[in-house]
Amino acid sequence: MDPISVSAPMLSSAAAVASSSTTEGAAISTSLHLVLLLLSRSSLLGAIWAVRHILALVICSGLLAILAWWRHPGGPAWGLAARANSHAVAKEIRGPRGWPLVGSLLELMGERPHVRLANLARAHSAKSLMAFSLGTTRVILTSEPSVARELLSSSSFADRPIKQSAKLLLFHRAIGFAPYGDYWRTLRRIAATHLFAPRRLSALEPCRQFETTQLLQSIHAQSGCSFEIRPLLQLTSINNIMKSVFGRRYDFACTQKQALVQVDPEAEQLRRMIREGFELLGAFNWSDHLPFLKWLDLQGVHSRCTKLVAEVQDFVQTIIDEHRARRDHGSGESSVDEADDFVDVLLSLQTSEKLSDTDIIAILWVRNSRRSPLCIT
Image 1 (cartoon, rainbow, N blue to C red):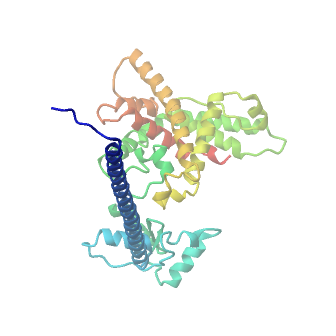
Image 2 (image 1 turned 30 degrees about the horizontal axis):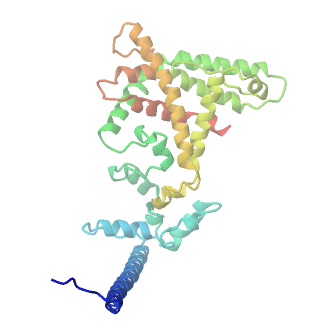
Image 3 (image 1 turned 30 degrees about the vertical axis):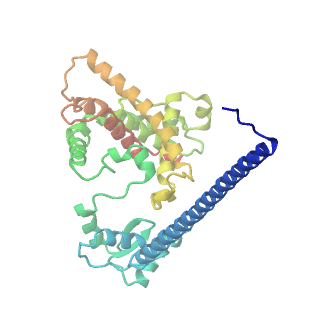
């Protein structure tokens, strides 16, 4: 066969056809990309609008719920509790509604809050019982001693809200703040048997006599000139407590001259920890009543408590280890002697009462902090 001959016009026409097909393919591909882009943009806009509508619905529902809780007598905290316990039938207690979300917090800010509470009780004719809200915290107020006595003796009011600082500083593991139950009854039994029993108090009488003698000698040494007796009374009280609890005395600085000498650095550390603890416990904390503010730590309570509790644990754990080592090198008996301090008592009861070292630290720390007068110096 003769070879096929291809002329130049034929090549040019074939190239034109190929070029046109390539152009059409590119145009189709571009069109598809544009369509997909428009669809993706429209779906994105639709998703954004859907999210906006959902957020608006959630916000409106939240505002309606807050207003519904606020309209309840006593304010938002009581309305929220009534909503959560809708199956329980209880008589409503009269009281001010306050403001949405915060309740009566703003009304009690400032001087003489007790006068404002008395005025609110009269305004709502609720001297026997008045309910009001501090954020999400429900509060009951009574102006009648008989009703107050009934409330304080009722197990229904045994558990009270625990401040954030109290929980972080281990106060919830001590008898004054522990939840009502088996653990609280164990602590109460230990206190009644080994702390406030007549034999225990009689055994500690020489300690009290010694501290009283030291007080009289200090007063006599400064006779003839004016001086402040308050620091001397504080020194006597704290050493009496420390002797019965830790089994040791601390040489606290009562005067400016002694403070400059710094006789006992450990005593000054203890004084500083007690003062810091009381400042944290007594400070008003918005997070106690508005829980959604806890993660912000606006007042620095969480960070200060975390730092202090680590120092307290190291301080008290050292004393516990010293007592435990002394017991191990002694007879090793677990019986409690009347001359033992409270650390020895708790260590002897650690197995039978199932007390951890953390429990013992909390009990000792809270006992010293609650009874110590050094926080006010």
